[in-house]
Image (cartoon, rainbow, N blue to C red; front, side):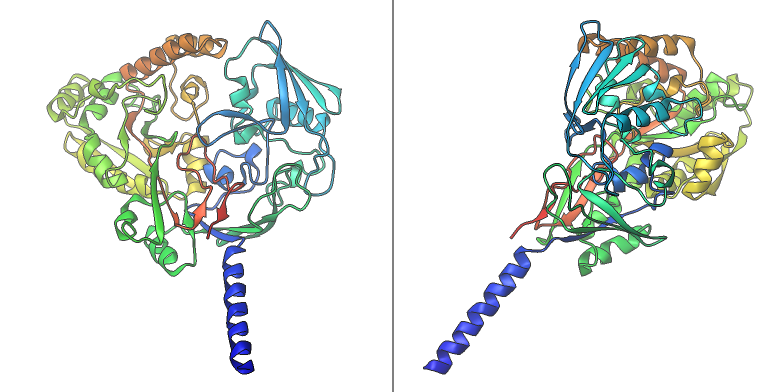
Length: 492
């Protein structure tokens, strides 16, 4: 009897211990398709940087929430002057950077002044162009004065490019990022993974996870077995063509949400013959969006006709402006003096939407007489050759930055597009706070871009998330380029 009781007690204890171990799991391996070029969100355009560090390691005065809303972050509150030009931010106190240094208003001034400085390397320097001055009122109060009212100012401060960094560590953040977030950087195994661990002195609500490894899985074919084996528990941005192998498996959740990723056939507008409107229009008529969406996003992308997310209140459907029409495309090329067609290059970065979509688009353009040489490039090459040096004819990329239609007004942007009328609309939008007026201006801007056929507007990139069914807290949608794991936890 005594032996039986001992065995029973041992079994109960083992079961309880096993249950506790399962319930107490606090580690996560999260798969990402692209390795960031470095780890400083304030010094690079690559979305992969924010997808590891935004909200997790680095924080801003404000942050963008899972539904695209503006939330307080390092600023606990703010007031706005009657003329809309002076923002006074009250900061959280007792906040420390991960190296133990104190956060205060001086760090805010340093970060904003650094981002807008003449020698700034910030990829979104335009976000800070409206700032006239940044003044420290006291350690917990900072006053930002704008040159003119800016309706999107608080939203702009929530971008990854606007996170707050410390002067002591700003120069080394590319390799050893130091922020104020609930996770701190532990290790970067180049080509393999980036590991974050829970910060012990976080000022806000602590994270549930103790450790998170962002594992780089660039090959879509490797993602499915990594998930099925349990080596990786979550892919917030899963390749759409792998969904069929996961759907129906009760161990996983498949969540299809929206993004801010306008997927474009980008065109170098100053390079002949693309400097001719009729040539760009011919390209737009040659594109069969349905075939591209089916092949490049497993049919999950939403067609777009200009640069605005269909999830936006300001979105207008302009997909009918250039319906698929091979005859019309050939007619326009003839009018442009290119009846016999021409040759061009198509540089394709690594994502499957680009590589798969590029093959389809090359076939479609070949049908109207445009013979494309496909040139695969890695992200570092794309950023250098296409984005920076504008050395390209055509390329395919998703612009995942939120509410970024103003990029077409930038004089040195890689589209090489300039339209004074469009620039005036954006200039007025920038100083307008009234929502109804802003929506009307955004609609005008979309129409101008469509009329000018600046790029080939393809589709809004879907956010396909696949993760262990026991996980909660991962974002369904992607209003900003981020893998926010601050609320992620394992459930029984």
